[in-house]
Each structure stands twice: as structure tokens, then as C-alpha cells.
Image (cartoon, rainbow, N blue to C red; front, side):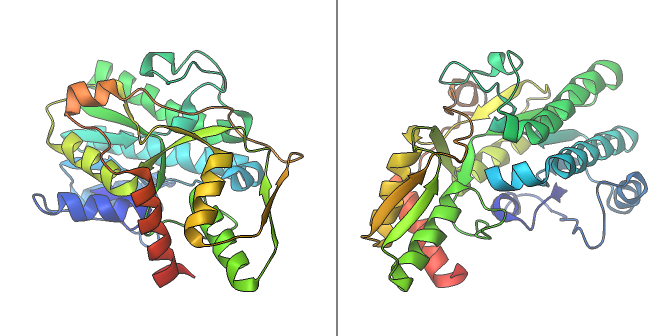
Length: 302
């Protein structure tokens, strides 16, 4: 069972693991995962052997600032209900997809899994990040008391075809692609971007992330130690803006609004544990991934 299997990452995960496994994707219109009785109904109906928990209430800096309570409640309740049901119904393995937002705001780069609890997350991401860490703690407790087998994967910021391009809830790459593409088509001579461009991020192509999750399903790992899923290396937001504007074909002026937040100062993961335990590392060149994402947006999302 893949929660969130109809979403951005989930759709690629389902395509990948369906090659070797029978997959069920619960839809939110049929099962509200924040409600205990709904989750119990789901498990009693489907009786899954493996649960991959991808469903999340998530967005960029703006969405996080506007919905901190909902992001915390929905994410923590979905996780709690699913883990408890997995215990009750004897699931063989629970795979929890966490988030890079769980790391401390000021963390030595590249982030190592052992540093996860060494500080408070960046404030705008904290409700979402802490909700995901709460489920990690629950999985550790359920392993110790009930023997529930599980894994925890922590992907860095994802991007790629089928991403969310809604300006009210999208992450930075789809938001910038849409903004610059529309500015080009409208003949706008200025595009304003949040912050000062100094913050850095790392990005993981969605198909690479799906490959890592597929490997987790078939691995013999049964312990919820966190495993980073890193991407193509650290890049500043200013450089990211330059790359996207160039490949969209926008030739106007870029202005930075430093009255708006930068978010976490730096974000880049140490991927050695994933390589050691899963034999996995990101393979998609960043520029190639950006081109493919822009191409998909122009064909489908504009």
C-alpha cells in the first residue's frame, strides 16, 4: 500500500514497484488518513503486507507560514494512525518517508543522520519537520515494544515532471519555472524573488527518489535508522534562479526582496548511508533534470 501514491513522488513510486509487486493506492476521497476509524477500515479492507507512507500535507515557505497548525496536525495524525494500524494488522514492513525539513536550522553541511536531533528546525518548516520526526520516534518505540519492522528515508527537496505548480503551495523549483515562463510570455521586464538568494539547497530528481524507495521495499533493512536520500549537490537559490530563467528563455531583470524569508540557510545531505545500505545514489544530472521538468510543465502545466 502506497499512501500518497497518486501524488508527485507517489506516482513514480507506484510505477516503479508495480513492476514486481501488487500495489494499492488509497485515495483521500475514500479514506481520510487523519481519522483513526478510517484508517482501521482501510487496513481491514486491504490487509497490506508493506506500507509506504508518502502522503503528506506540505508546501513551500509561504504555505508553511500560513498553515503551521494544519501541517503539524495532518502529518502527525496520518503517521500515528498508520503506524498503529500496521502494528494491529501485522504489517511486514512500514516505510516512512520523512523530510530534510526535520534537520536543525543550523547544521553542519553536509547533513549527517546522526545530527538530526542536534537542534530545532528552521522555524517556517518546524511544524512539518517535527511531525515527521515524531513518527520516526514512534517507529523506534514500536520496534522496541512490538517488533514492528520499519525503515525511514529522508529525501532532500524533490523536483521533476508532474510536480505541483500551484503558486499557493508549490516548492521553489516549480514556483520559479512557472513564474519565469509566465513572465516571458507576458513580456514582463522584472521578476521578483523572495529573500536575497544566498540560501543554498540540494535537489533530488523524482525518478531517482522513486528508485531509492523501490530498493527499500526489497531490502532486508528492518530498523528505522534514518537514511538520507541526497541529490546533485548544493546550489544557491541565486544560481538556481539563473539556471531556470536561462532555460525558460527569460531575459528580463531579476530583483530580490530581502524583506521576505530565505528559509534554512543551507541544505545538503550526506548520502553515504544510502550508498552503503541500499547501494543507491542520485544519478540524474541537475541541468538535465531541470530541462525535463521545464519541458513537462510547458506541455502539461502551463
